[in-house]
Image 1 (cartoon, rainbow, N blue to C red):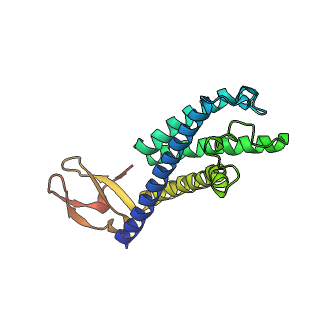
Image 2: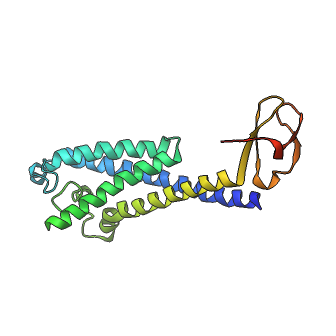
Image 3: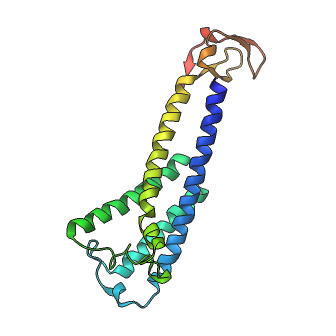
Length: 201
């Protein structure tokens, strides 16, 4: 039963790793497009961003650097939780920015995030709407992933226990259902009765 649960979790975990990697590629693509916008000659780029108060060109450049950094970490970072946390942080800032624009009664066309689709001329197509709202999907996925990692970690602590071998001091991990087992220590080979040993971790 525990083995089947672990197999199911492995499939879900692989799916979350794939989602984070996909998110990283999306962020790298967005950063590249923003760098193209940053080097452009549109007069809109010299206008102040209605929410940030700095020039749109500067805001686009800063956002491109942030997306580049988070995208690289999403692709090559070691910690799944840290990847998801960074992705959630970035997309949450996007959501807060959109809410701020709505509160001010501003559209997104002349803002740091509104010019994302300009170089590709996608703003009037379905692809433009997909690109514009993709961060919302990434945000939902990031928070779902964070909750899943938290739940799995709690379940792992509940389903598995660790003890110290009294003979060699090696750590032994075993299913909680095996608390009454008597086993051979995997480190020294000595007989160990799991029930009589203090738990660690």
